[in-house]
Length: 241
Image 1 (tube, rainbow, N blue to C red):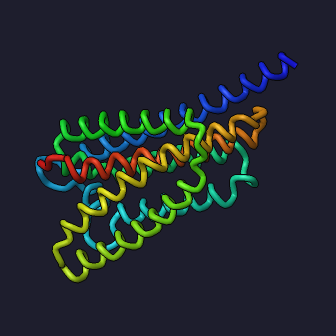
Image 2 (image 1 turned 135 degrees about the vertical axis):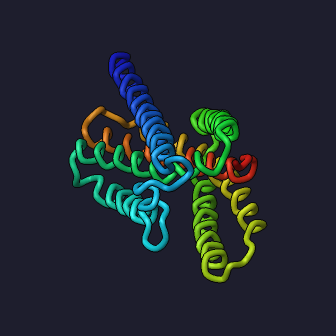
């Protein structure tokens, strides 16, 4: 009996470690891709050919990459049971790389010290909420459902803001500020919720391929929580160049 408990605890710890390791790797890939892309966009103050492709008018590369990101997330979410572990890993790493490319604009827009402070602040908030979600005895399932509803609302309002700014040329700075505040609240809560989900799944992990794929999907959820929280903090407190 004690041996069975020991094996179960070992598999639980392994699942949790794998999940957070995948998340950390994805953040590292995105950070490197974002920084490297940002230094390839300009040459002597002028846009390079790559810069024109990425940020040029019309159907720019950023839009292509953004669509690719959405496609990867949808594919991974809907086909995770059918695809192989290797395919899931490739999809996850590809997403982190592409997202890093689309995030390159933050190195162009914001000062590096602001990016560093926002990252440290996000890391602290993420750690606190992940720890809370992992250790609390309170069931966060209902809380998580309300947060997901709020997230849908944020997406709808963000799309409206995009239309107002891009096509109607309206000043949406106040609306953008309010959306950023809402994002901080929602993704802070989702971090705790997702961390608790990981603990519950880890309790049943047996180390087979299916659970390894679930670990990757859990890492993707945590990655998205971190990135969206980071961007919201940066939009509010970041100093532009």
